[in-house]
Length: 290
Image (cartoon, rainbow, N blue to C red; front, side, top):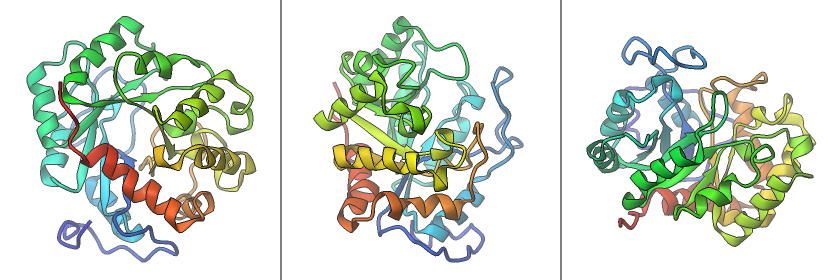
């Protein structure tokens, strides 16, 4: 992100570790309740985390591009999503939340603003049934969008394959979203590794505090990340999950979280693949539209 884009952000103190040039944070949110009210029906209420604060974090760690994830607390209201993408055209992309009833005109507008996928959440509340998922996929498939799944792959070991079979690319959030100490023996993890190896699924190395209460010092988390890297680094993404909403465990500070990047990705070429080239491929190459 250039200095011009960060002009409105407070000066950030330098970080001990900075990400490579062109690095992309593939998962962040913004919460600003005074400007963008939350939906009455929501499973959590986050504290404010403004765009200005996020841009300060970007400056500090060398994040030059970002992917805004529309959070569930806004429900169907994408005003915040649209405003932020409109302000940061070119170096931000977005993941919307589409329903089977979402007007095509909305999806077209979001696409023009930089949206490249929809998120389907199967946790925290009643998960959508497969008919609903099929309806969502039918809405976004003509735009070449992918489907980002917030799913516990142990609890739902076949979901990734089921969504893939609908003719869309699938991105799995937050390292599979199951305890790092237990995920390795599961059928869902074996399935995900196979899909990753085949290049048919993507995995986000994000929110490790969701899979371990001591994520920055947990050997199981490191082994999980290393397993994904060994399997196929060309289908991995990295994200901060800033501001770390609704975490089941305490969240380390941002310096500790970003310092996991060189631990998980010690090879400079692999690090550049995951942080720079992969996001360019998934979010910035114009998708083929049907």
